[in-house]
Image (cartoon, rainbow, N blue to C red; front, top):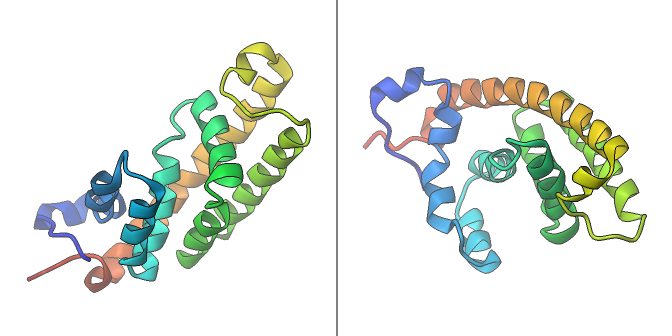
Length: 163
């Protein structure tokens, strides 16, 4: 399952996103089984992009980052897949950051409470800790996207339909 791109897209700083965007849009709002079926149709590189962007696109705010990290770790159980996908692109730094986020979320989950974005409104210390993690993640993810873009360009046949 490859995407058709305009040749001008090859110069885009979002080429890795453009290579997985149609698949993610196709399953947006669908049940987990439908998402899993789509995921299983993808090659390993596409799976890495799929899981990374399914998470990354929900990290724009500190609250969203906090809740969506917990959701991926505790509910979807997709965190190890996100990490594996990042490692496919040889990004060891973000993989380590994901480990750090996972440990942090585990420490919050041990407090026997359901993690909610409103936790940050009621706990300034927690907000400050998550803010630092979010800033580190955001910085590291920029490099991840560069690595993914370079990988896509070096391996176009795995992602792009030139037919």
